[in-house]
Length: 337
Image (cartoon, rainbow, N blue to C red; front, top):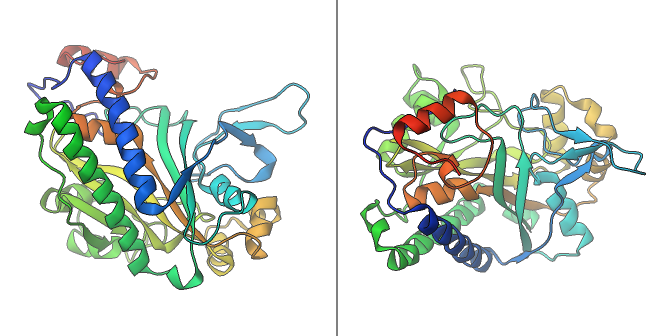
């Protein structure tokens, strides 16, 4: 397993019922803060899309989507991995203007996920996307948006602690963000793998935005995998925070400025994914028929873990777990929902 870290002597700060109340409150608080900061409007989103549409997120390109047939429908349906592509098409269909955007509750099933204290087969995110101009396709605008998201987290934590004083023992999320590129991080820790590099850096920089993920570094390997057809690899990143309970870097969000026709063309070729050019979504992108956008996904369960001081993601969401996780949590006195 990846990061099945269960700290010795761990005890939850809230009871199960208090946890449920706190999750409901923090979700409402954060949605309000996020939508206000980024000018987002809530919309409904699909649980599944047509496999032939090219709208499903391919993640790292190896994960198998859950697929099934629908009575009377010719196309095979796929449960979404994320809504990275669907959101951009929705902005066009709903006629959003520059500076405006959408957010939604995204629920997904990732059947190939390695299960541990941070990873579940069930994924819940706030997925958001907004229309930008060609002039805003730059690192400065990306960083400005990251700071707005962090401020929303800080304000949510502050209010949550006023309602549940037990949570005040947790470290406060700093409003200062450290920005570093994946190449700079590799140069700092050339002997460590990508996750170890993140842990080493984020421990001393508790709110970090790691930029430029998807392309190969000087070592010949990317920091992490990224599908070639939603983020521009030069204008994206992961928001990482220090998890004081698990003593590790925790990724809260993957986000970025999306591909334009030029970067999509380049990244499809680099990734050996030229066959996607024939898919409806990709044809629209290459022809410049979709708006320029930026967006991302923010993990609801991860945010809940961080703000409520939880050790295992199964304490804040209901899922299915393997015997190893179940036994480890039982031994640690952790109740899985």
